[in-house]
Length: 244
Image (spheres, rainbow, N blue to C red):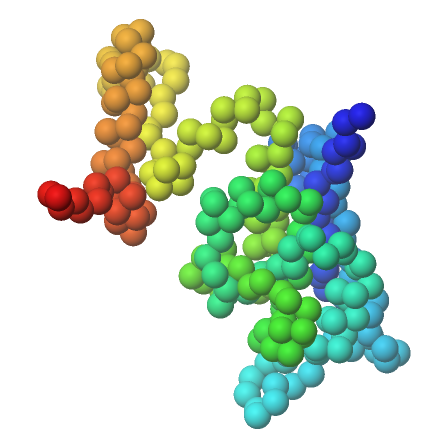
């Protein structure tokens, strides 16, 4: 008897649960959510506060501006979520490791993450360590909180789930596949404001089209993302050999 496939599930801890599903409730992600291809649970961190004011933050130890999310409150919120041990525990943070397509693919292939949305000046380091939170950044900039970053992460994951995109090949030939940016795309009309679709794309020669797309992707990557190109070049470089 075949084992039952579990629904990919995202659990989000936030101080603003009303922000969800937001953009995740429309388009591909929204249709998939309505169809039960994935599930979203949003939990209010303030529900784990213990005082009548539902306080979740306090001043930074050692002084400084802003407030810090308390370790005891956030730990209680994580514990109350009751996520299984095999589910990743993520903290959206500008100091985290940059989110990559390879990490997105790993997350999409798993059971689904618990995502903590930070606020204020940050989160008490002790809860990050005690609850094993993996810090993830969506870019070298600072947002008001982790909610928008969490939406970006979840959207990137959901589109890779089986049945979400119209074609299973849609996610295999796009930016960051094989350390390349995606090649330029064209569609009708054939002529637009004096510019035409490259003739090779309407030639019907699939081999030449594939070669053109690869060349364009490589050229774009060299110029716009030399960091990616360096990784790709190192992967393609043949190993040194010596004559025996």
